[in-house]
Every structure is written in structure tokens, then in C-alpha cells.
Amino acid sequence: MNLQESIKLIDKQEEFNELRELKETFINKWWKTSIGFPVLDKQNTYWYKRIKEKETNKFINEFIKMIKQYPSDAGMRKEWKMNIKEIINDFILKSDLVSLEDKELLLGKGLFQATEKFVNRAKEFDSSLEIQDIGQAMRNVWIMNIIQMLIGKKIELTPSIFGYSMLYPYTDNYLDDEEKSKEEKYTLSERFERKIAGEPIKSTTSYENKIYKLIDEINSEYERDKYPLVYKSLLYIHRAQTKSLKQHKEKSGPYEDDILGISIEKGGASVLADAYLINGNLRWEEAKFFFGYGVLLQICDDLQDAENDSNNNHITIISQLARKWPLDNVTNKLINFTLELLDNVECFNTDDINELKELIKKNCLQLILFSIAQNKKLYTRKYFKEIKRFFPYRVRYMRKLYKKLERKLSKLDESYNGVSTDKIIKEALV
View 1 (cartoon, one colour):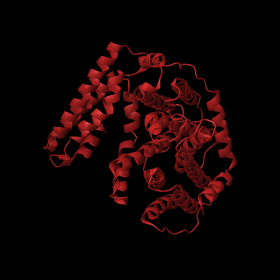
View 2: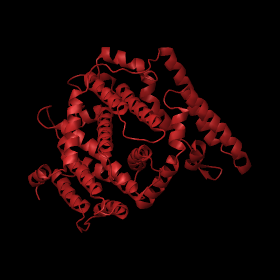
View 3: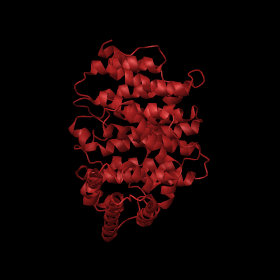
View 4: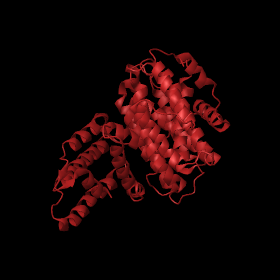
């Protein structure tokens, strides 16, 4: 099958009505969302930010120091844990980034244990995976864990969570590989779609063998006849990812390709598939929220990658604007979209739903604010001056924080007193 035939096949394949309706709903919602400056909760003064930076630096240094001082005497480890817990809780009480309620919500329900199991399984599945690939997959694991919490399920690593999350580094890396032609990518996509659809197709390469095994993980949990929407949602995200190959081109103007439609379809379908893989079936309002949550995360990612995408001719609704127009209005729209989506969701009945909504909202807003700081030159001076009042730290500090933390963690030994550093960090957090 040649490239043009593959494109026609993807464009002509029928989407089931619910997904088509969701896509149209959120395209309309995006256009209707205000570009006015958003109503945000808290402004921070220059000196307040300096204080928070000092507290954050102190916490990072004390945490790293405590990891290095992990006791060799098992009897002293209880006191060590009490001391490091006091350091963590003291920082949380002073920090705007996370609260004690957030910590309890995330770490008190088995999230860390599920993460540890995933990392171990990922290494067993493919020992050649780079740490950044595991990290990419782990991000989707966490999203699926949040979905488990929203729906009221126990946080655990299921075969579907493992299989679907692990597909991300394999498929994304293949699609981003500039040494692979579009014809090769569409051919692989067509074969992979047949595997998702349940055809008895055999792998022809080691790469195909890996991704087919990951689909088999999902097959082991969900029978196709009993859970058709699970596999329809997988087909939908697969088709959306294949369509997104149109974003990998040298030039595209705002009216030449439906970049907004592709982004909304890809982002929404991704988290919708997450949710179906968690619960098997969804009520309409649940499906609507999860699709919208995926749209939100996709555009947040596009904002975070604005400069890189622009430099690499990867076309998104953000990179189309970058370097041609300021990102002021589209960022306002993204923030307002986030607030409206999370403030108006009422379809979940878990006891801690309000805390979960606030946690998701806070994390999304922080991601957006850090992305703005990283892409300062893509905004007007007036807008940046206004939005930075809501930053948790000064701009320079925000731009360097993650790299600083990564650098300090990378200097840790693999183990201390016979215990791996990973296990020590887990013991400190849980």
C-alpha cells in the first residue's frame, strides 16, 4: 500500500458516532473559550518568590543529604524516616506547588507502589529501553492511576495499563524517527491497526513483535466481544496518531491542514482510551470529561514544546503561531479551557472528588505557567509582565529548576549501605 492509499484509508474509515460527536464538541468548545486574561487565584510578589526559592533550595539540599545519610543500622532507620518525613512535610506546608492533602491523595493510595511495579516490569520487558523512554511511558501510567482514583477504583498496575503505556515510547519514537520515510510509517501503521482490530497478523520485525506483545497484554484483560468500546477506542487513537503524521512537514499555514482537529482528536482519543482500559465501559459524561482532559493535556504538551516544535517544523496549533504571532491569546484560551473543564465536571462521586479536581487543576496550571516561563520570548512584554505575577518563583529560577534537580539526583550513588537509592527514595516518600 503506497502513501496516498494509506492516507485515503485513514481519512475514510468510519469513527463510531460517540467519538465523532466528542471531537466536534471540543472543537466547538475550544473556539468558544474566552481569550480574555484568566481569573487566577493568587498573585505572588518578588520577595515572596525569593522566599519560596530559598525554601525550595533548602528542601532539595536537605533531601539529597538525607538520602546520602541512609543508616546502615536497621534500628536507626525508623528515626531516619521520621526526620526525612519532617523535612518533606515542612516543605509541603510552606509550598504552593503541593499540599499535605495532595501528598496523601497521591502516595497514600498505592501510587508509588504501582509506579515501582511498572518500572520493574518495563525493564524486564525490554532491558534496552532508555530511562527517558520509561519516563515517557510512566507519565501515562500516572494519568491512568488518576483515572482509577476518579472512577473510584483501587490504584494498581493492570495488564492494560502496562501494555498501553508502554506503547507510547515505541510508537512515538518510530513516528518521530526522521530516518523512516512516511511510506514506511504508514505501512507499519496499517499492519498495527490490523493487530488492534484482532486479525491474526504475525510480526515481521523485532519492533513489531514488541508492540504486538503489548496489545496481547490488553487482550488478556478484556475480551473483545464483551468490551467492544475498549478496542474501538484503541483504533481511534491509533488512527488519530497516524493522521498526526501530517504535522511532520516543512510548512503549513493555519488554513492548509486541520491542525486543531488533529490535535483535539489525538489528545482526546488518548485519554479516552486510557479510561476505557481502566473501566471497560463509560457513561457519556465520563467519556466527555476524559476526552476533554486529553485535549487539555495535548495542548499543554504543545505549549511546553513550542520552541522545539517550531525549530523542527513540527506543526501544532501552538507552533503555527510561534515566531509569527505572540502566544498571549492562545495561552489565555488554554488556561480558561482548563478552568472551565475542571470546575464544571460533576460526573464522579468518589469521596475525595473535590480534592482530586483541585489537584488536577493545580498541576495543569503549574505546567502551563512553567511552559510560559520557558518560552518567554514567544509572548509580548505586556502579557508576560502580567502573567508572571502568578508564577510560583522568579522566571530565571523556574527555567533552571528541573535541570538543577536532575543534576543533583544524577550525582547520587546507585546505593547507600547496601540499599538501592531508588528504594531509599521510596521509603522516604511513602
